[in-house]
Image 1 (cartoon, rainbow over the protein chains, first blue to last red):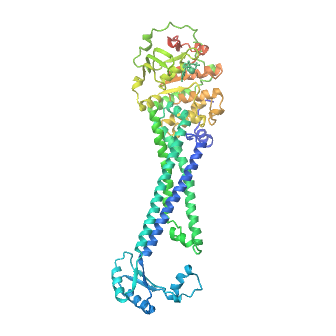
Image 2 (tube, chains in turn cyan, purple):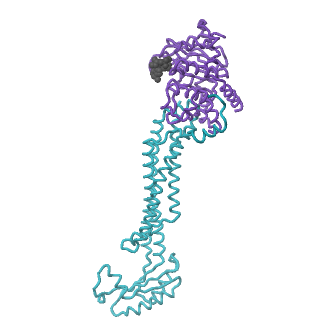
Image 3 (cartoon, rainbow over the protein chains, first blue to last red):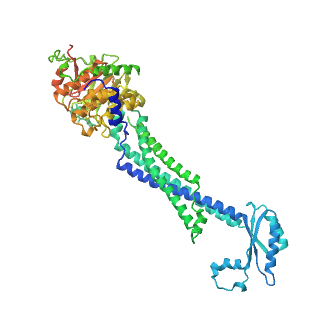
Amino acid sequence: MNEPISDETLAHVAQTVLRRDMPLIPSGSIAGNALVVVIAIMTFLACLTAGGALLVARASEGWRSEVLRDITIQLMPRPGDDLDSLVAKAVSAASQAPGVDRVRAYSAVESEKLLEPWLGTGLDLSLLPIPRLIVVHMRDRTGGELPGLRALLARAVPQASLEDHRVWATRIGTMANAVVTLGAALFVLMIVAMATAIGFATRGAVAANREIIEVLHFVGASDAFIAREFETHFRRLGFRGALIGGLSAIGFFFGASTLSAWWSHSTGGEEIAALFGAFALAPTGYLGLVLVGAAVTLLTGYLSRTIVSRYLRGLL
Amino acid sequence: MEIYQRVVTTFLSQASKPPFDETGDRFAGARPKTRLKPPEAASLGHRSENALVRFENVGLRYGMGPEVVRDLNFSVAPQSFQFLTGPSGAGKTTLLRLMLLSLRPTRGTIHIFGKDARALKKDDLTALRRRIGVVFQDFRLLDHLTTYENVALPLRAMGRAESAYRAEVIELLRWVGLGDRMNASPPVLSGGEKQRAAIARALIVRPELLLADEPTGNVDPGLARRLLRLFVELHRLGTAVVIATHDLQLMDQFGFARRLVVGDGEVTIFDGVSS
Ligand SMILES: Nc1ncnc2c1ncn2[C@@H]1O[C@H](COP(=O)(O)OP(=O)(O)OP(=O)(O)O)[C@@H](O)[C@H]1O
Ligand SMILES: [Mg+2]
């Protein structure tokens, strides 16, 4: 029984038999699993909020940049006017204006088509004074060339009115900003709720493992050592929760973008696409979700270490 | 660290001599008949200036209760060996907890390793506890760890790498007869095996002061004697040992040991019979 141990025996024992370096805070408790579930759900919701806000921000950005480059010229028919020649005049005037990229006039038939969704088909619209539309696509979105275009147009076709959608675009921008702000607020609230849950769980674990803490103190463990053990324990739980929640969110966005691409030709698909920009999260967006998960993991460990340290400082 | 290594090597080389071999009972012949000296005067109890533990007029009450112990004056010298005895409920565990600084006295002064216990900061406390080994009456092994991990715990708490202490721990486990129970967790160990694991955990750091509360409470007399020989071995290597027990027969077998008898809240000291 007491013959010296050979190195081979030691190596054998160490590699095949000996269980060692198990976490000092027992893992796999019911409370621990509950915390994983809470963290997973909270991470999932936080990722959805963050991703949703990103989508709206990006969509409104794209939408506004398109809208701001499009300017609409409207020609109201007055009795006795030859609308077609007026349209031709306006088009040639607009084409000569500085900064104009493309000019396209809607024909009478096309204009009537635009009204179809409201008035239905089969109506004879030729008796109605339907305005004609000319869409001018500018080279940039700043609106700097607008006065020139306006002046040229006023000289050529006085009754033409010019609509640059700027008020609209501002409103959409404000809306999008409000949605993003709301998303950020929800995100912060969820992180706070998660931090609170982690705090409760840590205090519970400290109470449940008081005996272990006492023994660790007696065998000469420092407060920092014990706090680190708790941190490791909770970081592991946080990682599991963040992984589940984060992967679910990534899966959700991926599935949604695939589905919306598939659907985009149907009615309704376009409206969703207008709001969320085809649901496609940019690669940086996915990276953001991964970062959220990593942050949750670190936050869990950091919070529990802080709480345990404070508790230990209060002990003898 | 070098000193530590050297001491461990000595310890381990001693380990290969058979402490478990009944025939190696080096006290068998020298076993003294119980002949205790008269009680020391209280002032003599703490004459030593470099005592590991020195109690001065120490009293302790739990909450608002009566004083469990009072006017304690004694000291524990380096490399000494003593039993702490007295009837059940007399205050042995209380006294050990005072020495371990897990209880603060309600009265008087305790010096540990020359430092006033009241003035100790958290870091000092950690450092002091690394010089003290404890065997608790109820063992206090961690149930979710293996026997190996439990015994290695003090070394791990010091931040040492597992590969650095593995051989040491295995050796000690074999020495206390737990070589084939290394992967068992405390709940499946027998009372005596738990006791040996608890003792091994206290010994592994080669403490300067070993406090053991009823370390032979759960084992048969033969094993009790063998375990005690383990403490004696440690004592020979320079550790001061305090063993709480009410096993009179066992104490008689180690008659060279000093005895601190607790009764009626006071400690009476009997010097051991020198061999
Ligand atoms: N935490 C506590 N709170 C209140 N009273 C306590 C506490 N611990 C011990 N006591 C009381 O202090 C007295 C001494 O207890 P202690 O455990 O020190 O005795 P002991 O000598 O170790 O006994 P035993 O030999 O049975 O282990 C007992 O009367 C006990 O009831
Ligand atoms: Mg006791």
